[in-house]
Length: 69
Image (spheres, one colour):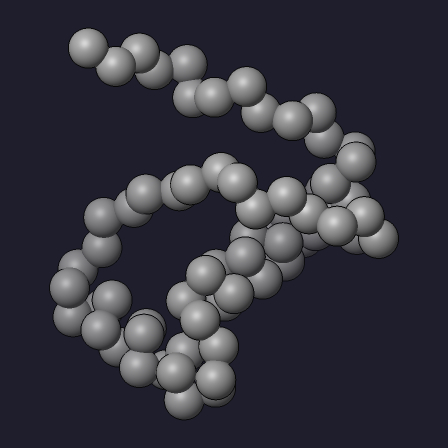
């Protein structure tokens, strides 16, 4: 499987209590929140597409389309 590039940033807003619990549970498993979220995203993609994730199957993103003032 090709090595994934980890250069895109995803910013989300969550309840602070949920974030604290998530971070604590990740730490208990000796994982970073980013590792867990990448795994969840990969599993979601595989469940929706019905095939194993392969980053070469998807063209690279060109940004969000948003302009900054």
